[in-house]
Amino acid sequence: MKLTATLRQPSELVAQGLAPEVALADLEKVAARYAVAVTPAVAELIDSNDPNDPIARQYIPSVEELDAQPNENADPIGDHARSPVEGIVHRYPDRVLFKLVHVCAVYCRFCFRREMVGPGKETALSREAYASALDYIRSHGEVWEVILTGGDPLMLSPRRLGEIMVDLAAIDHVKIIRLHSRVPVADPARVTPEMVAALKVPGAATWVALHANHPRELTPTARAACALMVDAGIPLVSQSVLLRGVNDDAATLEALMRAFVECRIKPYYLHHGDLAPGTAHLRTTIAQGQALMRALRGNISGLCQPDYVLDIPGGFGKAPIGPEYLMRDPDAADGAATESGYRVLDYCGDVHLYPPKA
Image (cartoon, rainbow, N blue to C red; front, top):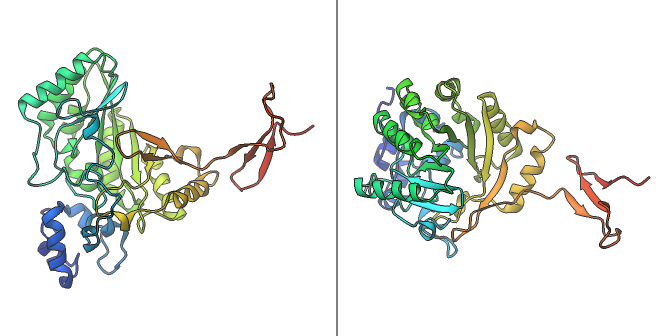
């Protein structure tokens, strides 16, 4: 029978064959701490015969999530440290995060806000908190971009989302409204013509950042949802997280980035896994990530290249951590007035002098 409702309990996952019955007691302990939600669209993608299925690894809880490491943190990227009023994170001068809701269509097992989202948490900003957040944005003329996040802003109704878009676009210095969402892949039926119409407002340009981590997530239905937005003139970029056992091999990353571009989605960020509690089993090393970025360079189109970034713990922002290709030549004279004395690495791993010796 085709699944029609989101699975939210470990017992439901077991009943659908998405988790082993022997693990039920442990999974209930995980679910008591971290939210669980698997939509029909995601459940359909999971190969229950594959114990290492990369889709299941992203969404199905694991007892390993109960093993928190000493260096992990409930607020690993320092949202609270940069939150001047409820709902706002002001980390960079010209943009703010606006956290409207604390619910998602699905709950990723590696989520850096896993302690803040899901049932039992506040589902949305109160009317008063929303008004205070808008006042903050209005009073800070340097804010050029507002990024709607949470939770997932596309969990709001088209009516409510349209009201928020109008409120933001009415602020003269806000020129860009960006939404970060999993919905087009996790619950593509929510992306309706009414939702797309709500995203377009005069006075500000709308961008959507789609989160997907494996090429199988970009199903025909998900691609159609993305096309609705792109065809309406809303540009899309991608966000992915480098995850052990999901996309930590060059072939999968290449297929994912190509799939984005085929959908007219520009690869934007490949995030190194954050130090969220109970996620060590999903994190790679930075060295592994850099090696994968080297594998992408030159082998696939420049359109397909994301930036590999790390959110510095404590709220200090993102830093690019991709491999280096330019080095000073140790034989070059120090303090040379002309631009010379560099070694450049090409995508094959060969070293070249710049400028070349005559």
